[in-house]
Amino acid sequence: MLELNKIYNEDCVITMQNMVVNNIKIDVVLTSPPYNISRVSATDKYNSRYSDSFKDLRNDEEYIEWSINIFNNYNKVLKKDGCILYNVSYSSENTQMMWLLIAEVIKKTEFTTADCIIWKKNCAIPNNRSKNKLTRICEMVFVFCRKSEIDTFHCNKKVISTIKKTGQNNYENIFNFIEAKNNDGANELNKATFSVEFCEKLLDIYAKKGSLVYDSFMGTGTTASACKRKDIIFIGSELSEKQVEYANKRLAQKTLFEVEKGE
Image (cartoon, rainbow, N blue to C red; front, side, top):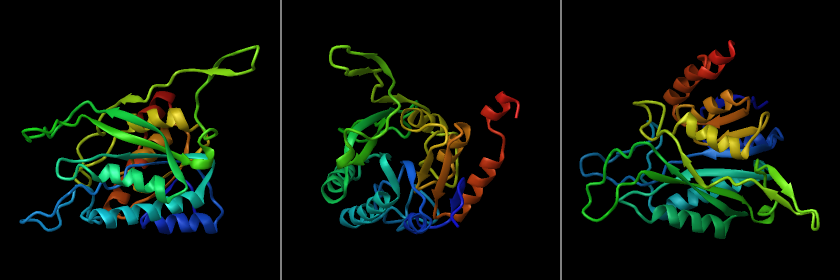
């Protein structure tokens, strides 16, 4: 039986196959996959920013095929009107990968982009040394939903008024721009983490208390930590045994939220 509030040390496809067997459906995917933006170095054939187990050195075609398979598995476990919050970016070495990926997901899966959220980080280190490319302080979060659910997928926008004559609702404005910390501090196991603050702001828009959130690339447990603070249920997958151990220790500690509540 698949357990909730647990990070599985395995490939995400295996976890999702087990979800299907156990009839577990998720409300939201919140994840940041390996971006596949590293390039093989003459001195380091296995240069990777992400983990001790995954090397983000596929060619573009391989990476897209790998990603399409993951999205097809998301389709099997995502509830009706659920959504996928997919944080990806590009690099000076591979500026095209992100755009090719998004286009192929739209063309070859049941999903389309409903929104693109800009995440402005508080720090842009390392600065770009290129003579003509800009230093990136922003990353993207693509909001995917099924093409058939583009008008119905869940969002926590509140009704602020109703037009009496037509019965049409007017909803609050939530802007597609989030400012949040880069990460929760230096971590030698993973150089590409995001922050609990960032995850919480996304969860505030698309999840609610009691939702089930899945992170297919859990890393050091940031999504799980944000879910814990929000009373949201999670499942995670992570290939790196060391990162799973780190994440479990992190989750075992009292969060600031729990201390503030006196727990």
